[in-house]
Every structure is written in C-alpha cells, then in structure tokens.
Figure (cartoon, helix red, strand yellow):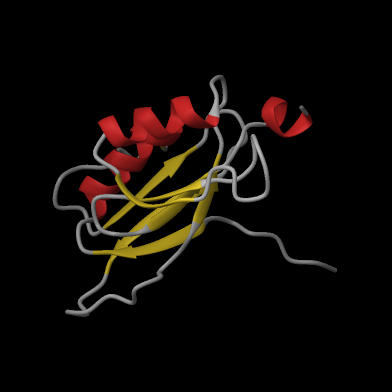
Length: 130
C-alpha cells in the first residue's frame, strides 16, 4: 500500500488573491461547481491537463514562515527566459539569477510571488535535452 499526494497546500494571507495569481501563472482553473470568490478562506485550483490541485488556505498567524512551499516551474511552450519575462510582467519579483551557473544554457531564476513565496523558473524539457 502507498500514499499519493491529493493536493498541495499553501498557507497564505489572502487565499483568493493568491489563487488567482497562481491560476494565471500555471494555466490552472477553478474546480467545477466550486468557484473561488473574494473572501473565501480556502481556494483550490486545478490543472486541466494533469489534475494536480493547489489549495490556498488563509492562516491567522501574523508571521507566516519564510518558506511555506517552493515550486519549480517550466514553461509549457516557451523558453525559460520567456517564462521569466512573463512572470516578471505578471508581478513576480526577482530574488536571484542563477542562469549559466553550471555552464552555458544551464541554471534557473528564483522569483517571488506577490506574498514572497519563492519559485524557480527552470529550463523546459526541450531546453534540458539540448
């Protein structure tokens, strides 16, 4: 017998706003029949392709832990650099640029979402195969 990950939970201050931000970044959607609304303390979104779900839960703690979760993301149809530019334009902030760390064409860029959660933008599958 084994377990599986039902969904990934993210502690946050504003579940609706953060779920909306990530929905646009990842191309996820609301769960059919369970739309997220402003003021909801729990908001779940789902990847229409894989079924992976993210649950954003508001927590009462004044100080949230610095690292509540960490995602590595890759573009579905563009390069790493295209994705970095898209996310910066969408409101992410750059934390560190590690492009080329292990030679030309390698590395990643660490960004933060609007609440300071860090994510790394990695090269897509095609770029990793080069």
